[in-house]
Length: 371
Image 1 (tube, rainbow, N blue to C red):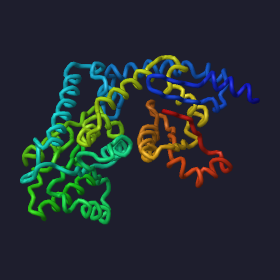
Image 2 (image 1 turned 90 degrees about the vertical axis):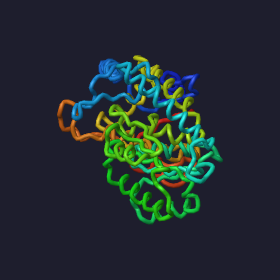
Image 3 (image 1 turned 180 degrees about the horizontal axis):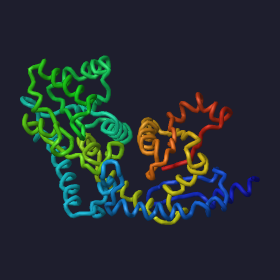
Image 4 (image 1 turned 135 degrees about the vertical axis):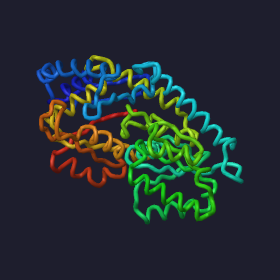
C-alpha cells in the first residue's frame, strides 16, 4: 500500500473523542471492507447484548449472576432502585469516612492522625488500587499507601520494616469478597500479629471491604472494626476498581474519585454507541478479531510511554486474560481461546525486547492509543 493509500486509510479509521482527548488508530490492521461487512452482524448482536447486560441480564451462567460494574459510575443504569441507592450510599460513605480520616476526626488510639495505609488483597483487589495510586496519586499524599498482595515472607518483612515506626498510625484495609481467600487471610493474620506484638488493638486500625454476610464481614462486626464497605455480588474482582475496592484507598490518598467516576462514565457512553466507527471498544474488537483469527492467535503488546502508567500492562493482563481466557464458549463448545498480554514501559523497554517485536517472530498485535 503506497503512502497516499495509507494516509487515506488512517483518516478513514482514526477514532478521536475531543471530550476525552482520546485517540485510537487501528488503520495498520489489514482488514478489508469485505471483512468489515462480514463482521457487522456480530457487532449488531454485541451491541444488543451489551444493552441487555446493562439492563440486568444474567451474564454469568455458571454462577447465575448479573455483571454490573458499569452501574458504579452511572447508578441510574442499575436495574433496580435498591441497587442504585446502594451505589450512591456507598460512595457517600467512602467520601465521608476518607474525609474524617484525613482530617483526624477518625484517628488511631492516642494519636492525632493516621499517616499510612496498608492495603491487603490479591488479584483485582490489589492491582487496581496499586495502578491508580501510581497513576493518579499525589506526590505527597495525606496517607502513604503500601500493599500486601503476596505471601512471600521476605516481602512481608520488607513492608513491615518500612512502616514499623508508624504502625501505630497505619490504617489497614482488608479486601476479600468471600472473606475466605487464603492469601489475603494469611496477610491479615500476619498483620494482626505485628500489631499485637506492639501492644496495639488491631480492631481499632482495621477496615473490611467484603461481601455482605461473608466470614470477613462477620469478623469485622463482631470485633468492632473501624468500618466495613461492600463488595457487590455483581462486580467481579478484575472490574472492581471503581467500587469500594479502589475508591476507598484512592479517596484516603486525596484522589478525586468523583472525577475518576465521571471519566469512566464518559468513556462508557462512547463505547455504547451502536456504530462501529464511532465506538473505540468495537474498533479494538474488530482489529483483535482480525489479527488473531478470532482465536487470539496473536499476543497483545502494551508499551505506555508515561512513567505513571508503568502498571497499565499488568492491569490489562489480568483484565483481558482472565476475561477472555476460556476453555469453552457460552454454548459449551471447547474453544481454548484468549489473548496473551504483555508489556512494559515504552521509553525504557523499546531498547530491549522491542528489537524482537520489530524484527523477530510476528506473533503480536499492537494498537496506538493516545490520551
